[in-house]
Length: 268
Image (cartoon, rainbow, N blue to C red; front, side):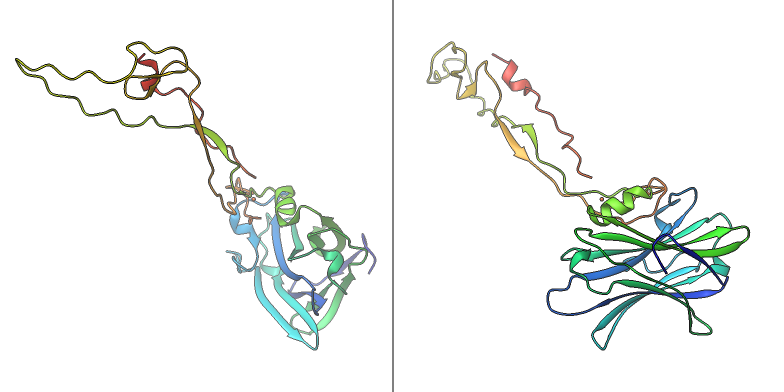
């Protein structure tokens, strides 16, 4: 069927097979499904993929891949009879691992009646170039019945870009930020007692701007800083994450520490 066209599908269990030709240098492709209300996922549970292979309603599950005769197929089972009434759309997507879809030959999505094992819809995705994620098709409700639409929308931002469009929050490793270095510990105090005078510390009695003062403590001048960074992970927000369930592929956040002068530097 051509891109943008639609066809009625039975309200029953359907096998969704995302297939491609295998071979040297061909990137892997992973199938996934997102259950939407108002165009967004409600929570992380509405995103079904290899790391979260089943929806809580039992309506969608990821069955995994098989390689037969040089063709790899990643399969989802969508039981439209079990989809919750609030769900309006089930998006069928794929993401490339180790390359782009321009390097994936014969990419297609085929929908089969699981009981009768007959093909009810098929869409061959052609013309891909730099895309690393694809919405291949979708099931959607129309006047009490279900239809399948061939979408063919690609993303060069990968699963992160696709997930973000549907309300999923994805965290990337945090960018490094400047943080004030801690001052060295103060030297231990020299005890004093009658008849004993504490030795003088070496160094000028008064520090000029930018010069060391008392046992190497910095006088007035800009504090030194060090670079610090941290790593984040694929964190879906409560709905899309904010309630969404996505994988989420994941945006960097600045380190929460700010360059503040250390109190020890204010001591003169």
